[in-house]
Image 1 (tube, helix red, strand yellow):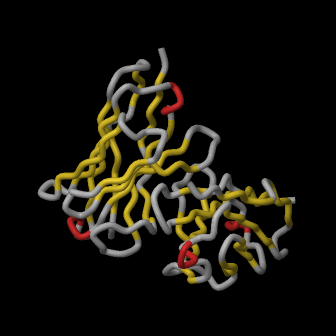
Image 2: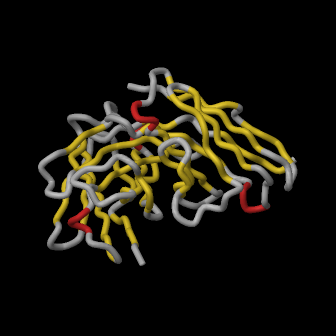
Length: 108
Length: 122
C-alpha cells in the first residue's frame, strides 16, 4: 500500500499567517490522485482539494494544493479562525485508499 | 440536500458481530459507489471498504478483509457494513461516505455522515 507521511505533526500559527503542510508518499501517486481534507474538532472531514490542486466546490481560494509524484503541499495563505483544524492527505489512485496521519494547525 | 445518517453502533464484546447501516437521502443513491471509513478515538482516518453502484464490486482495507462485508440495498437507499469477529482495535467512529462523482465505483470521497461509534470491549 502507498504510505503517506504528513509533516509537521503540529503547526502553531497566528490568524493571518501562512500555513504550509506537507504530504509525502512512499510510491508515486498515479495521475496525482491526491486529496486534502479538513477536520474541525467534533466534525466529519470535509473535502478541500482533489487531484493535487483542484479546489472542491465552495472552498475559498486561500486554500491551494500543489505537487506531483510523491511530494504534495497544501497551502493556506491567510489563516482564518475557522481554519484551525486537522488536515489529512489521501491517495485515491488505487485500493487500498490510504490517509496520512494528519497535521494539526493550532492557534499560537 | 444530501444527507447520510449512520446507525447500529454500540458496545460489543470481542469476537462478536455488529451490523452498521447508513441511510442516504438528497441524492440518487444508486448512482454512487459508497464507502465506509473509520476513525479510532483521537486517531487518524482509516479507509474500510467501498462498494460499486450495483453491489457487485467491493474492495476492503487489509485490516478488515475477511471479517467485514459491505453491501447495499438501492431500493431502500441504504448502505451496510457487516462486521464479524470484532477486535478491540476495531473500536472507532464509523463514517459512511459518498464520492465526488457518480461513477460505478469512485475512490474520491466528498461527503461524510456524522458517524456511528463502535466500541469493542469485554
